[in-house]
Amino acid sequence: MRTRTWFVGSAALVLTASLVVAGNRSTALRGQSRQDVRLAAVPSEKGGQDIFGAYEAVANWPKPLSALPGHEKWTWGAGQSVFAESPNRVFILQRGELPNLERPKQIKLPQLGPNIEFPIGRLPWRDATSTSPPGALERDGRVGDDSDVGKAGEDFRWEHCIVVIDANGTVVEDWTQWDKMLRRPHAVYISPYDPEKRVWVVDDYRHAIFIFSNDGKRLLQTIGEPNVHAADDKHFYRPTFIAWLPDGTFYVADGYANTRVVKFDKNGKFLMAWGEKGTPPSEKRPGYFNNVHGIAVDRQTRQVFVNDRQNHRVQVFDENGKYLREWSFGPPPSDIHLFIITADRYLWAADRGTSKMLKYDLDGNFLYAWGTWGDFPGGMWGVHGLSVDQDGNFYVAEVDSGRAQKYRPRPGANPAFLVGKPVYAAWGARTQ
Image 1 (tube, rainbow, N blue to C red):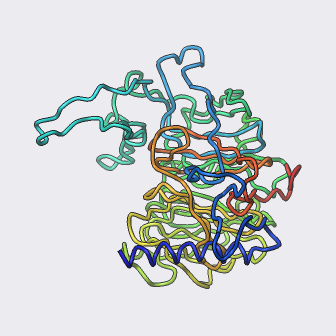
Image 2 (tube, one colour):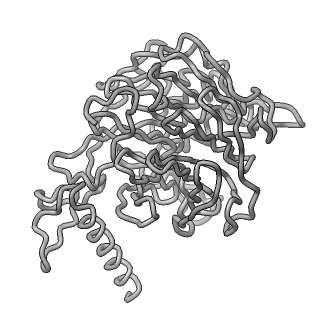
């Protein structure tokens, strides 16, 4: 037990020191003394255990998909991404719809072993990402189909891939006119530097990025050639995420199959790319990647942070791909899905392996973590998208639970425990 005690004590010291160093940027912990070091997210509260960190889950947000006319028997599919343009206009990206099933009664499975039962009490029982379309990317050298996830209309429906939710959890817009164009929508964004607030959707199975007008009525631009993959200046191979610099330059994490970062100018003109295929799970060479699944930029230094997912590390480069430094997210079960850099210049990462949100400074010093695994309200399972609105509400999209969730800050929460607001350089900065 000595090792465990040392680790817990060290973690507490790291957190305490980081909060003290933050000093002028965050509220100091109350009641701090040599005998009483308060590490609670809400220092004024007694009891509790910060299960959801400095937040509380907002009930009935979004409202059930089954509340829509004609969708009484359906629910959310794999939650791919979420983006809050404002507290009253939140985009959710999902992979179709799934049957709205009740939790099955527990049954014995003697064919698997003695006393094996399913489902296990309190644990999730359906993985939305394995039951949602699409099926195989390719089969026999051709684009695959969805037959391996079931029968369309019975086991899934390819509808409502892009929806917009208001502050009360109601679906106020559905972009169903684009459902047939999408194959495996992966991420949704609005650039913080775009006054037109165009909506960007990355589709990793179509190897393309689609840019829409803010109201969703027009497809304005396509980057990449849909359904054609390569590693050149005009193609992707399963791209994942995007990040922008203040001048509109943007970087694409490319991706699941390609192992590179691609840089474009503000108009979508190819500028450069870097990255080589490494050897997971312990590749150490700079600029070698395995599953480039996440990217963020620091607007002050213009440094590019790349999630080298299968090697459990972030690699940091200058804006032209020169390697600068890296740090590890820790060994498995660590599995970072994505990260963001907030306006207060901290990096927040979503760890699918531990179901936690992790806070680091931009030098890689670990500062704080919160979150717990589960498909109950407030629990997390497979967080694949993160966003924060102007009021400080925090949103996640979950591929495994098959949903999006909204968390509001708890009254009196120490700001150091909250996920910072994003950059709003060209729009929406009413509270920044």
